[in-house]
Image (cartoon, rainbow over all chains, first blue to last red; front, side, top):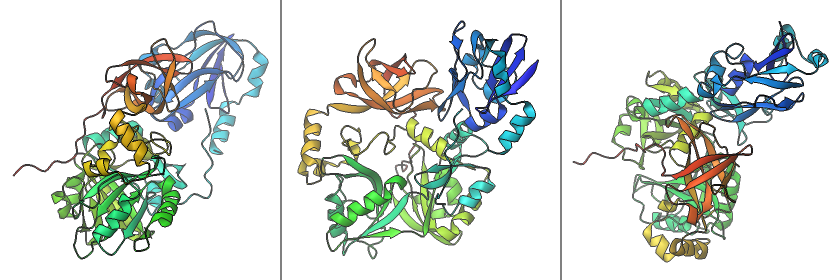
Length: 123
Length: 383
């Protein structure tokens, strides 16, 4: 299992042909208290850069983008009842969706953990 | 995830360094670098203000005086530009009003305070919105009679302390604050520093706004924050608090197109002014008062959990779009999303079922009474 990071602060953890996607700890810190999460339906096909989900904090709505192409195989419906989990465990229990990987080559567009950490330092 | 706007050429308030030291996240707001939240976060800061006390830096707002030869002259000059009664405003009393354009639209909303002492009478203190300062001041300068002038105050900060424990915390340093009636103001000493304290605010809670010398602002803020009842609060919670209180945010809920009748802020118009008119746009405003406005600001409660933000369309159930949300978000005290927006008068009754269009989905909502959270302004005990 390998985890990649996008410049838009999504993480994507790939296990075989299924990728789990969420937002990084840095992202949830920037957002502040999350009060609502809108998730995609299973079966929806997403292209890299498409809006995959919406996360609403007290202050504003922010889009979560698909870091790669794929078909939604599962959304984390537990977040509907407990949106605050995104603040508590963003890179664990508060994943947003799972995608069936459509194009493995796109993973090379993304950063590894060290590169993402260095990227966040520049912000 | 969108990136924040770059901070360039932003003005700083006298409390800037303190905000940074307290771990605030600073954002550009009306030309200033302002704290949007501190470490606790918007939710915790909001609830802190509702349960104890919050300290807000509102130094970005404009402070100015209208200065004339006597109260009557200054008050008449302001009455020519606003629909409120200032001639009969008592010494040391404060009033919310709106500056009107010739079409009866709102140039800005502001607080006006009459001096507490007879010797100093003929001066009305104004507090205006940061983003409208320049527009307001130019308007005053072009419209004031020759014997009334605008004096802009540049060397003072403005600190709001809001919440059920706010006045007690301030009174520990400025005992006279405890004696102030709601919507009244007086000069007093805070730990020996000369301040002007008004019992008012914009959160729906009891509290004060203190105009203080810029150089003493940090010492005063530190003294208040040393009190265990007081925490620093950013613009994020200021916005959710005023939304719950049903209060308008200029440029969002009211603007140059909106009349005070449409904006549902006719409480700023006292009886004499309603009847006499004599303010800009009087024809439109008096007609709207008599016949009712075509559209009106309403409060909205959403059934679900998804918030509706500014710009969301307001529609009839399964029908046409009839209006727009002007402010909306999650209400921490209510524990649910709320909004305000404009709808045609025939759909404005409390309890009317409507729908808010959020990212193409239609969310059920109901016209609700405002404030969404009961006001807790100070009422003097009856003696």
